[in-house]
Amino acid sequence: MIHDKDYIIRIVKQFSEFLSKMILGGKNEGDLTELERVFDTNMRDTFKMSFEELALKSSDEITDLISTKDTAHHIPYFELLGHLFYFKNKENPSPDLAAKAKGFYETYLQKSGIFSMPIVSRINELKA
Image 1: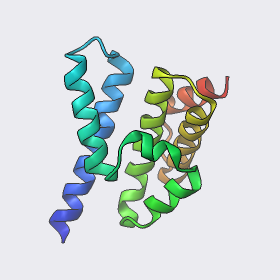
Image 2 (image 1 turned 180 degrees about the horizontal axis):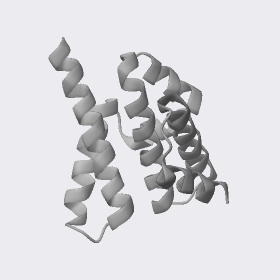
Image 3 (image 1 turned 90 degrees about the vertical axis):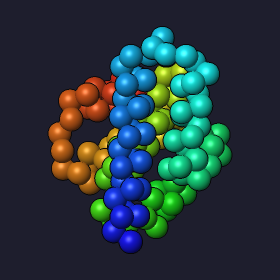
């Protein structure tokens, strides 16, 4: 069971790192089809659904989904969700995506107790 938990947290962190690189580097690095495939695979591995299915859920529904996971995994999941909705909002700006990104980033900062200037900057950008 411990190995399963370690595997899950590793997948979440790798997906979060992938999104951070996409946000910083843009889509110009690498084959677009390959990046989309990696993104879709990570979505299925992490959330067992596509981004479109996840985006249709309310923030409360997504939070409830995360609350069913191991408590130690909550913080990485909220960071990942912030990155995920921020990245998708950069691709296709939407008030709903921006609100979800902002909310998940704020939850991450609150639960983790970590001060992250890049995330605070993204929250301020999303407020504008």
